[in-house]
Length: 443
Image (spheres, rainbow, N blue to C red):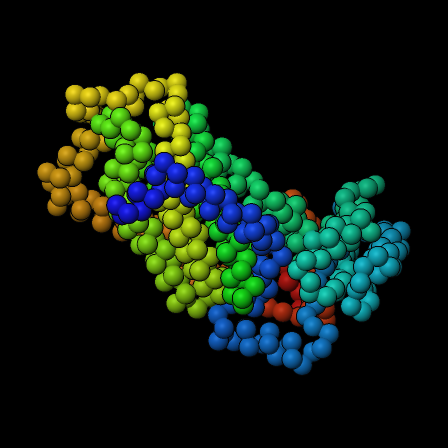
């Protein structure tokens, strides 16, 4: 660690460290911007490789050249019963949908509920994850979804769900990144009350995140599976661990500036003291993330390499780029509170304050047994509270309640007969929405 400290805090070498990171950022940052082009969100990528459903998907791909299709349902409802003009409109909407969308086959004939107040038409399209959200929007435009003259028209099924999902979560990465940056900036500002010192950790983590995205892109191009979930989690994970490492080193640097007049010597000493902890923590977290490779579920399995790459880049940046930038900033970086890092030639003893966390730490040191017991009991209760039963995973309302996002089908279907379209087993929980009285009819 002493050799590394001399390199990243040297009078000339600190600038070389900064140039190396910039040189990595230019190509890898560009590749990272293309990460969304190589993510794999197919159903098969989320399933265990040896699962029965995975085998079924492979059989479909091998024996059905046309590939899978996805469904869209256009639901019509009029309180008091559908009128003949409504049935004419349903047929006209079906023709418009066939003209504007690349349907697989023709739309089904209208299926009318026994009470004749609800009807639906089903359409099928190729299973293309990139196009489904737009096709869902196009279908809504084609049938003029909404309520007009007492007739309510809803688009649901896979098309409606994907359209709503895209509208709500389409820019989730940008939102998560923005909220995370603002939150971290506010917290660092409150802690240090120095604009530059609050910004430096964000710059370090931001550069590390862009470079990590590039490495994840290369991993995906080499044959690894990366999902949108992994790319989203990467943002929060890197800003969390990266900021934590920055806080530790900045705290040590501030202490050493009291003891050493030369900022280079102060940072070298701070890195020698805090560096081993950052290295040990980063390696532990990265290796722990790789344990996810043992998971059978594809969505969990793919998180391992992505998270490990992100954490590795974060702690390397914390050991190299962060010390270089803090050394460049020196005491001026703590403006307007430069007094907190003023050199104290009398030895630089730091005044200790009796705060709440010091008292907590002293209590733990004095009574480690009870402290461990409380921690274990709290962990046990937390695990018990978050444990999920197998039945809950199978019958999750998010999947079986229909596309409820943005009201794709709120209270639309009261009674629907089954038809030859897309036969499947359906599970509908009674407690999902007491206002909906679903009835299933079998022909």
